[in-house]
Length: 217
Image (cartoon, rainbow, N blue to C red):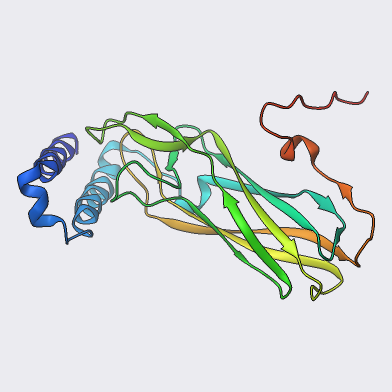
């Protein structure tokens, strides 16, 4: 497998040369062919090496939080998805450092009357890996995506569920698992206009650099 990865890296390095890049500029799926070849080699060599790789959907564990409870009509609020990554793995950042990499992305299935204003992703960190000749921008250990929303006057009152989907590709130092998508759910309560709203999950939604409130004893 090591020899095959070396061959793939050499071919990809030749693709990155200016003269060669002009000929493949309009073939964005070509790098994925190399990725598929590497995955095939991984599958073929795994039994021989007695190496077990996890399912792609099990590498990332998302948990959701809402900034207000309840959320009055006409108010803006946030949903945070805190995603924990299994040890030894990473996922590509939302804005990856290479065009051929699959970005991490969160989408929402919104009920009527609730709209997304913007979604904030962390920048990620640059790391080097054995399967690439350049450093890549990735998320590792855990990361938080914050989605800003607004509840309109037409939002249905009462308990609501917002379906979320996070798409990503997980890799370790040796190989990448197939791209996958997994679901998550954010639960909130929509209240009438001018209903008092209580901040929730202050430790998650604290501004960057803010001191977390002391733990109660």
